[in-house]
Each structure stands twice: as structure tokens, then as C-alpha cells.
Length: 172
Image 1 (cartoon, one colour):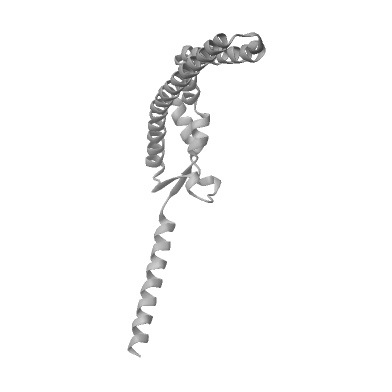
Image 2 (image 1 turned 45 degrees about the horizontal axis):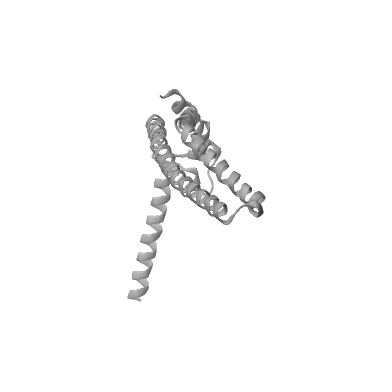
């Protein structure tokens, strides 16, 4: 009998806590923001992409030229290989290998440099988005702002995505 009373008290206490937590959750104001949509709509993203494209245009051209040269010499070897001496084939193979090594080294350096710069610029934009989300959350007195990818469902009226886009678009 004593165990039964203890289990009833525990069950009643747990039920009370669940009821209290659901009441507390009902009082919270929650918003959702689609970060990916924000990044796609704000003008800063396009501006960064254009500036990075311009910044790395010369490096990209060098790599493209190396690709063309490698392809040219490979085609030349295939086309004229039967007419070439062993020494000429060897020289051509060496030239192709050297070009390929240069291509790989420059390609890797290019990827690292562009990736680092893209991350740097993206972090600046993320800071602007966070600032906008913080401002909107403070003005709207939201208790919680969630990333849309982190939740399964949210009513459209809980989304502040467009507000964030408008506010970030005004920032520099």
C-alpha cells in the first residue's frame, strides 16, 4: 500500500511538471528563420560572389590555360605518336607530366585560397544576418528563434525570414 501511494505521488508530480512545462511553452514566443533562403535573397551574397570572381579571375585563367595545354599535348601524342621517335615521345610525356604537376599544385592552391576567402566573406554576411535576427527578436520580443532546417514543421506566421532579408539588405 505504501509503494502504491508513493507511485501515485510520483505520477501526480510528473503530470504536474508536464502540465506546467506545456503552459510555459505556450507562453513562449517562437520564430523560425530559413537561413539558406536569407543567404540566397540578400544582395550581399551576390556582391561577394562577384568580388571573389573578379579577385580570382587571373588564377582561374592560368589554370584553364594549363588544362588546355595538357589536353593539347595529350591529343598531339595520340595523333602524332606513331610518327615520333622514342626520344620525342619521352620529351612529350615529360612535358605533360610537368604541366600536370603544375596544374595540380596551382589547382590545389586556388581551391584553398578561394575557399578561405569565401569562408571569410561568408562569415561577414553571417554576422550581418545574426545581427538582423537579434534585432528582430528583440523588437518582436521572441524568446526563441530557430533555424528552419532544425525543425520538422512550423506555421508560416512564425517565419521571420522575409523580415531578416529586408533588414540585412539595408545593412552594408
